[in-house]
Length: 291
Length: 313
Image (cartoon, rainbow over all chains, first blue to last red; front, side, top):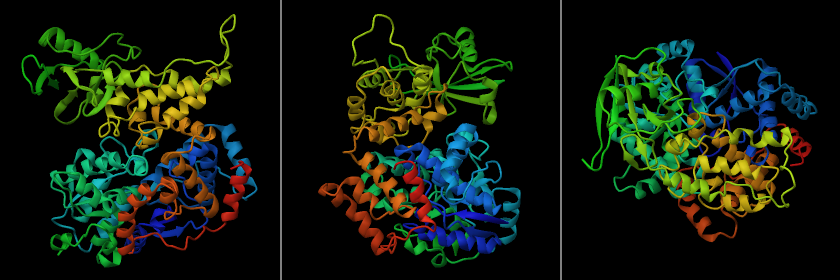
C-alpha cells in the first residue's frame, strides 16, 4: 500500500510523537507514505472563517498535488480529514466554483480534477479489508488486557455526508482495530463527542468541561486509556488534563494515546520509540497491563 | 414488534423520571410520531408530547430517539430500531422537561429574541414592498428554512456545559438578518454576536448540522456570521484574533505557528490571558513537547503567498 501523507501542522509541531508513531506503524505494516511537503495547512475550519474561497483554494491545491502523484491521500488528523473532504464536496458540487478555484491555482501549476483520488484518515485505511488483514498478520505483541476507549474527533463524523464511517452516530472502525490489536474496546457515549479544543482560546471553562465530561465517561466505563484520531483532541485531553482534573470534583486522570501509537505498540515497538514519554499524562501505568 | 422505551416524568406524582416500555406491532411505513400517537390513543392516554402538522413543517414534535434529536414525524420508526428491536425516546436535551417528552422552550425563545429576529432597515419604508433580488435572497435562503424545532439546541455540545451560549438556532436566525440585504444594522448585530456566548463560542462540532431536519444547517450559518464580523472589522475578541492570526500564519509559512497563535489570540496586552497560557506552555516545554522555536515554512510557500495575494488577503 502506498499513499501520499498529509501530516497536518500539529503532527509536525506540538504532537511530534504522532508523526513518529505514524511512521513506525507504516514501517511495521509495510505501508509506504510519501510526505506532502509542499501542501499547506488545511485551515482547520478557521481560515474559512476569514475567507471560505481561500480555504477551498488551499485545500484544492493539496488534493491536486496528490492527484498529480496518482496516490490516495492519507490524513492523520480528524480535523484535516474533515476539512479536506469539505473542500472536495464544495468544489465537486459546483462546476462554476470549481472553475473559479482552478483559475486561482493555475499560475502555481496545479489543477484540481476531482474524483481521482480518495481522501482517507489513517484509521479508515487500517479499517479496510486490506488494512485489517495487514494488521492481523503483523501483531507481535497483542495488547491483551488493555481497555481502550476510542475518541474519534468531530470532523471524521460530522457532517455525516462527509464521513467515511457507515454510521457516524455509532462508528465501530477504531474499535475493530483495537480488537485486532488484542485490546478490549470500551464503548461510551462521549466517544463521538467534541473535545472542546476549538474554543480553548475563547471559552476555556466550557472547553475544559467538555473534555472533562468525556474523560470521566471513559473512566467510568473502565477505560485504561483514551485513544484519539486527532492531535487537537490529544492536546485538549492530554496537555490540558491537569487543568481539567482540577476543575472536576471527581478527578480524571487517564493516559491519552494517538491511534498510531496503539497500533505500533502492538507491532512490537517500545513506548519510548513512539514518543510516549512526551505525553503530559504519564503512560507508564499502562506498562503493567502491557508487560 | 417494537419496544418503545419512553422516559416518563410527571412532577405532580413523582419527582424522578423513569423509563416505561410500550410494545407495538409497527407497519413499515409508520412514522415515529404515528407510533407515539398509537401509544397515546390505545395504551396510555397520559403520555405527553407536542405535535401538530405531521409534515415536518411546524417543528413541534422534536424528541430524542436513541440519544439524538429528531423530528418524530419525519422519520420512519422501523428505520430507528436499534438493538433488541427497541427505540429509546427521551425529551430534548438542554431544556427542562415539563412532563414526559414535553420540555420548557423558554431559554430557546429567550435566546432567539436576544438576536433581534426582525428587520431593522436603515431607510424609510418604501410605498410598496422592500424588494430583494434572487441573488440577495440566496444569502438568507437556508436560514429561512428553520422551523424552530429545537433539535439543534437540544444536542448542542457547548450548551451542555455553558448556558450562556446563544446556541445554534439563535445564531442561525441571526445570520438570516446579518446577511439580509434589507437590514441596516449589520455592524451592530455582529458586534453583539461577537461577545462571549456568541459566534466565537461555537466549537465546530457540527452536531447541529447533523440534527437539523431542514437545510438551515446552523454551524454553516454561524461561520457566515464570523466572516461578516471579520469583514466589518469587529476583531477585538479572542475568536476574531485567533482567525486572523491563523490565516496570517498560513500565509507566511504555509502552516500553523503554534507558538505565536495562542499569544496573538489572547492579545499582546492581555496580561491575564497571557499569564493563563503559561502553565500549559511550560508543561509542554519541560516535556520537550513545545512546537519547534524555529518555525519552518512548507516547500513552495511562495505559491501559497501568491494565492493569498490573488484573493487580496
